[in-house]
Each structure stands twice: as C-alpha cells, then as structure tokens.
Length: 228
Image 1: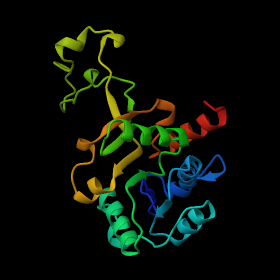
Image 2: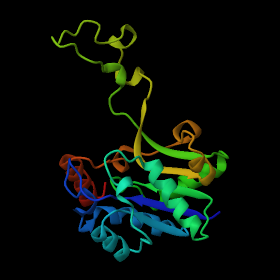
Image 3: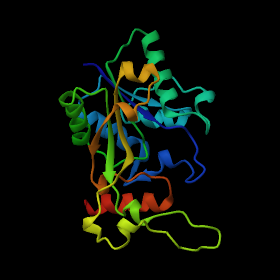
Image 4: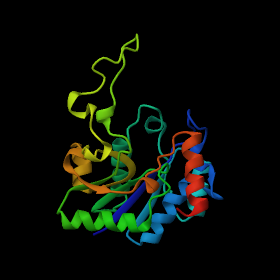
C-alpha cells in the first residue's frame, strides 16, 4: 500500500500562541510528528499542511514535504481536519500522486512513537478495517461526573449504581487522544463518519498528551526529560 501522512499545523493559536512550533525538548513541536513518521518508514509521503511560510521552512528542515501551502479558507477556526485532508489528497491526485491510506498526525500529540504508527497500521490490516483511531483510558470515570445547576445543588449528582462503587469496580471508559487517525483513502473521500467506521488503537496515558495549554506543554516536557 502507498501511505500518506499529513501533519496539520496552521499558524497561530488562541490558547497557546504558536504552540505548533514551540520548542519541546529543543525540537519544534510539529517536528516530533515528522520524526515519528520518518522513523516508522511507513510513508511514501509525509506532508506538512500549513498556511505559514515559517512553519513550512521548519517542516522542510526536518524532512517533511511542503509542496503547497494551505489556503486561508482552510486555515480558520471553522475549518475541520477532514476537509483539510480531502483538499490535500485532491491536490496530490491532480499531480498524479495516489495513496491508499491517509494518516492524520496532529502536531499537538508529540508523544506518539513510530511503534504506535506500526501498531495502528497492523491493526488496520488485522481487522480488515477502513480506519483506526487512537484512544486512551480515562483516568476518572464519567460515572462520577455530572453537570451542576446554577445553585450548585448536588442532589442526584451521581447515578445510584455508581454512588457506592469502588474505582476498580467501574467499567473502563476511553477517550479520543488525537494522536492517530488512520483511514483508507476511499473512506476519507466519501465524506462518511471516520469514527463510526473505525476500530480503536489503545495508547497509554503518557503517550496521549494532547497539547492545548501551557500545563499540557509542561507535562510533555517533564515526560521527555524523565524518559517516562
């Protein structure tokens, strides 16, 4: 199969300014995704999708393809990742470059490894699946969570079946961790729901850091510094 990895890194960020190029362990954040993709040797093309010439230069320096910049219409707060991926695939197909699978690598997930990418690709084949999406276990069960009324009253906050339960007795819940979205080309281009057509690849918490805030960034730094 011909595999394409797409790293989506638009410029700017309201929460953590220019987070996609912040130096994490002396390497720009987006470059960690380039590095893991290159180390996997799975991809015919590792494309950095960005609207920024500066980001493009950083991606090129670490070995990513930046054949074209993303248009402004796909670089605002309302642009979704699937539309970006479809646009990139269309651009390559216009150049007679065709791929069987597409892997979305969000730069905010720097802890994913080449082994994770191999495992996801193996799972795609093993399950004869159309897509693989990475998840991780939730640390705190949502059964211990609820919304609060304006007055803060906690009557009926917990469901009866979970009120007296020990943590180990509760079922394990999982969340999307944003690290790997692997899909077959035809599923992506069909516009169908990727998640609904996927199988889960489970990753541990320490490789599931999704950098959105300065605290997330500091946690990732600590994990890299300690090697844990």
